[in-house]
Image (cartoon, rainbow, N blue to C red; front, side, top):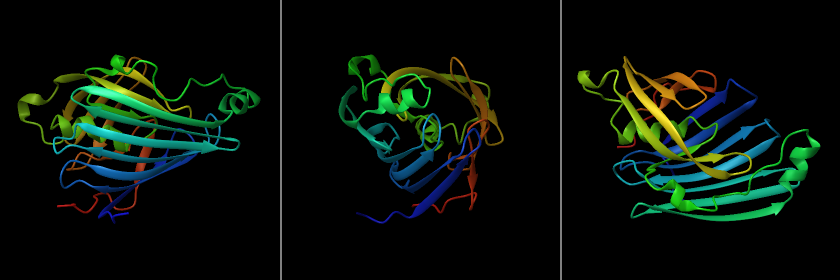
Length: 218
């Protein structure tokens, strides 16, 4: 396992939880990370993510586990087509039901073609994956004319703890002064980002802790 030159850590503000990512952003992004949360039930997610040099997602491997269950999904994008590989152990539905929650969808997606046109993944609850469209579209270093321009995207949205993958529409708008507005059908937030496009503050989700600027990987 290769050593990675930079580290990012966020603590959740919407629930008890955190995310720690080790990254190399010298030629696109390669990251390994762990995310913890207690909602809707306590779980741990571990992921490995890579993009091409232009920050288009190449693959995302995610595993999630809790008491009495474990799941994984691998998403790969090649030639514009997504492929999903999944595994499941235990009974997540039973654990959710016992905790008073609705059952979970199956990990992955039954129809990867629904993700056609998506170039980014979004791991639910992960500030790191918000950087993918920001960097791919160059929103961290916008021209003055780009301020206020809305960029509508289709993403592959991975939902912990079930690891169900759904297509989602999202909008990113440059506000200027290191801020980008994220909006979906049900939620919006004005993100504060650093000079490399990594999230510092995600209102309603998470704040970054420790060094406000990761060491450059180049």
